[in-house]
Every structure is written in structure tokens, then in C-alpha cells.
Length: 69
Image 1 (spheres, rainbow, N blue to C red):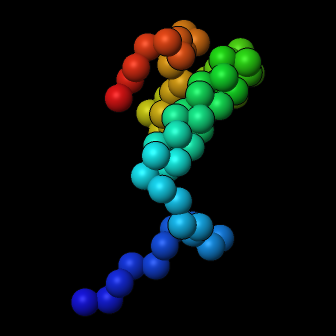
Image 2: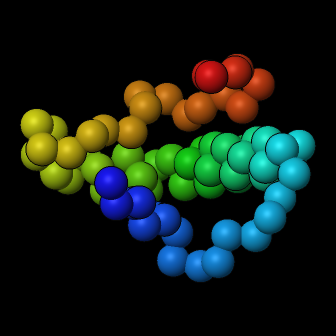
Image 3: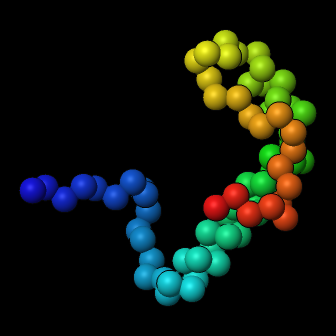
């Protein structure tokens, strides 16, 4: 069986389990903050597409205090 190629285009550094978890948490917070800061623009942009072909953003800004996992 052939091994799948990694989806990342850059070298994967060796990270501890704790570092990986902390980095993932940071990325989630960064994405949520970005979505909240640019919510109006993102909403306008996605609303301009046919609703059946594209996933729509949430109907209201995300609350980073709520755990979605």
C-alpha cells in the first residue's frame, strides 16, 4: 500500500503533544477572532453566491468562550 503524501507543503517539525494541542487552540482562537472582526464583510461576500453551492458563514458572530469541540 502506498503511503499518502502529507497535505502540508512545508517540513513538519517535531513537536510535543502539548505543543501541538496549544498550537491548535491558538489557531482556533485566531480564526474565531478573524471571523468576528471581519464578520460583516465575510457575510456580504458569501451571501453574494448561490446558497445551494457554497457553505454560508454562521448567522451571528462566534463566541470564543463556547467550546465547539
